[in-house]
Each structure stands twice: as structure tokens, then as C-alpha cells.
Length: 600
Image 1 (tube, helix red, strand yellow):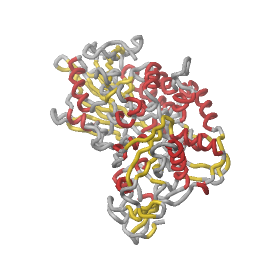
Image 2 (tube, one colour):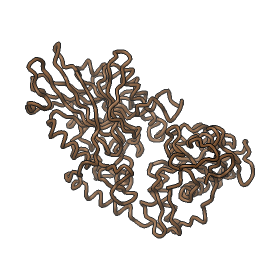
Image 3 (tube, one colour):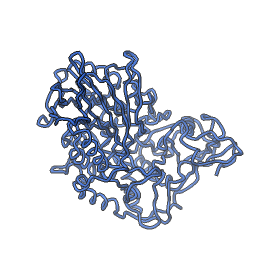
Image 4 (spheres, helix red, strand yellow):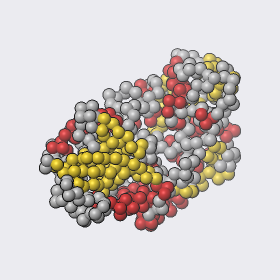
């Protein structure tokens, strides 16, 4: 889809891709504020504000619990609070001396964003404007990088969202599969007018995550390719400098650690922001995203120039706002960055901006009504609180739905005789199904991601290795001593969603043993598992595509796949059953042990 050139002017001659190029006429700066004059040298200061991983959060509201958001650290979320912080910074610095950018993952994550992608989709004829576009337009974003979750709902939804935004979505390494030219604007450039009559040209280069090619293969295969961040930064940063950019900022939907969750499936690094700073000269600052980690200020030395590049990653969902403060000096006919630092502001110090909450009050109320629809009843209360270290009924529910769905899909086919087993993760430690009425929000809370379901064929031997890999999640804990469940999981910083419990097999995980040697008493239907036996694994598309880098599954034969989100499959299952009875599906298939003695 071509860029709306009424909104974004300027074109890259090298690619033909539209880019933003706007002028900002600055009001005279205060004597001691941004843009202050120095009799000895011409100086100018400005601030770049940054968010990332907003994931559909506008209000400080949790649609899965239907109440105001809160966590153990009393963080708040949402663009309404970010808007207040942005207004305060603009008032202090002067609006014309600020830019506001984002590093991606905008339109997926809450039931608010889901509703306007699937229930009342923005792609419908005369459809609504996406709430995230409305809020970000109202706040006045200058540019946003693409995140991997932007592709979850398919390219048509993303393109419609792009059309609705008053700012460009950037992706220098999101290329058209046929032409290998950027499918989105690679960069945005803005002139900041100084009190000295010498404009400062600020370029923002957008980079997204190469893992999109794996995680959203079904949506992008044959349409777009996603080369590495370092490679594309090395191509574009010199171009931006040659176009007269005085300051180059990268908005990278990529963590800073230099690691990947998909192993060697692609020759690109998932979390490459630090590598970009280290390897590509000419960058002044990087707004980091994707990793959901708070990094107020982090310096990386560029290997070629020795210059220190500042990185900052504000916490997810609008919990933090990054501020990059730039001090420039005019010397030898050009502006040079003399100093740049970063910090983050906490949104829990701010009230929600009523301009934003009033703007989207109707959309919010529609979604609240939607998630509170009753779809069935449950005979017992179930919770994920102990799901990371115990086989609990609520995770069995996910696996039961997946097993039944795959078995029904394979019925009468070539793989119908193979036993179906299933994997599931504890995506949230606060999800629950109450006794009594079950609503959409209860069922959807089990599966906050837009994953879909697949069926892959694995052998007993492969499943053993799969389980061993999953069991790395536990901290090695010697037998005999006390066990603190709070310190038992997330070894090697493995998140909960990368620990799989498998239903349909029985096994023990001996956490006194080293990773790789923990699975014991692995059996199927009471008999020791045959390494050569074949099974159909019901598995989500993230895992099947290589997410988490689990062994064997990405290369296993796919015998079925579904385009419906697992979340909706669970909702449909509850509606069809009418009553959820854990007694019909709950069982203890796995348990933690130490030298054969159960931990719990």
C-alpha cells in the first residue's frame, strides 16, 4: 500500500519508498531551557521521548480481570498515562524541541486491540478507526517502528492500521519478497528549528525483528522478508548521514542482549540492538523494544569509532517513558552531538489524560461489555497460580481442548490412528476460571496471545528431548533442603511461556539433576515410552515455528493447522460444553521430584 502522501512528504530516491520529512518551526526557547544560547558557541538541546511494546494498552485497565491494572510493583499501564507524561515534558522543554517515537508491538495484546482486529475489525467496509491509532494520533507521535506482533492479524489489518495513523510505521528491514525493497518507510526525518537560524536534521531509522519470518510465517511467507538489523542499519545509517542528518536515532524492535529464541533457524540475531550500536558507526541513540526489559540508560561502544552509543528500553505496556536528552554544538559548519543521556519516567506518577480517555470511552465500554459475556459455567474454581511448578487443572483444560480439536480434525485421515498429546504453557500466573459463570474474559485470560493450533508428528525419542529442553526452566535444587517456589523457576531467564507441560504422557522432572538429565519414568498409557513410537503433538504455531528453539518440533511433519486463535477455540469449547467439569479432564501427568522424591 503506498504511503498517504498528504500526511508524509518526501521520497527516498534509492528505493522509491515514501519517508517523512517535515519542518518544525520552534518558538524562541527560554533563556535557561532547551535551545539556550551560548555567547561562545552556538548550542541547542532537544529531547526524544520513546515508548515500546504498548500491546494495545490505552487505559490503565486489565480486561482479563475487568478492573484497574495493578501488579506487585504497583506499575500502571496505558497511553492515557503516557500522554500526561508527554505533555509535562513538552511543557518543560518546548513542544518544538521534542520528538515522540515508538519501537513497536502496538496493535496486539489486550482485548481492546483484539476486538478491533477480529470482532469489529478495522478492515471492514466503513469499519472503525483502531483505538491505538486514535490515541497515538491524539498524543502526537512522530514515528513508530514495526514490532513482530504487528503481523499477528495479517498484513491487511496492519496496512489498514498504517493508513489510519498520522505518523509513519518504519521498517528498514521489512522487505517486499519480490522486489527486496522496503515494504514500509525505512526512516523518518524531521527538521528542528533552532534560535540560531541553523536547523537540526534528526533522522529516525526503524528496524523490526527478523523472527517475524518464523513466528508469523503463515502471514508473511512469500510476501515479505526480514533480514538482520545490523545488515540493514549498515546500509541505511550512512545514507541518512549523506542526506544531511545531524542526529541519527534507531527505533529497534529488538532486545539488547545479542541472543535469539529461535537458535540457528535464521542467520539473524533476534535481540540485536546492542550489536547494531557496536557494529554500525554513525548512530547516536537506540530506542530498544521487544524484550520487555527496563533499561533506563545503557552505553555501548562502537568498535569502529570508539564512540559510546546510548540505549534505553522503557518498560512494556506504557509503564515507562524514555527520555533521550541531546546537547548539540555548532562547529565547523555543522551540528555535532556533544552529549546525550537517557532516563525513564514511571507512568504510575501520572494521572490519565482525560483527552485520551474521553476520546476512547465508547470503545472501552464496548470491549468491557464483550469480555463480560457469559459463555458457560464451571463446577469448580481453577487457577494458574501454581501452574509453573505443578500440573494444575486449568492448564489441563487448555490441553484437553487442543487434544480434542486435533483428534477431531484428523478423524478418518491417514494419521487418525496415532495418539494425540498436547503442549501448553502457563502464560499468566493470575488467570483463573471461577466456580459458577464463566465469561469470555475468563477463558481468554488463559491465552493472552494470538497463537493458532497445529499438529506435528514426533517420535518418543524426540519427545524425550523436547521435555528435557523444557525442563531447563527449573533451577537446580539439591535434595533434602527446603524449596521456595518463588525461586524454583525461570532458570537461565527462561520465561514462563517457554516452559511446556505435555499432556498425554506421564513423567517426572528431577530438579536435583543437571539440565538435560531430568526426565524420568516417561511413559504412555502406563508403559515405558517407546522411542520409536509416533505421536501427534497438538502445538501452538509459535512453538511449531521455532519460538523458544525447542528441538525437533519446527522440523517435524505438519499434518494439520488451523487459522483460528487457540483462545477462540477454548471459548467455543466452553460454549459447546455448557459446563466445565475438571473431574472430566484433570489429571496429574507430571510432577517435580528430587532424587525420586516428590517436591510437593
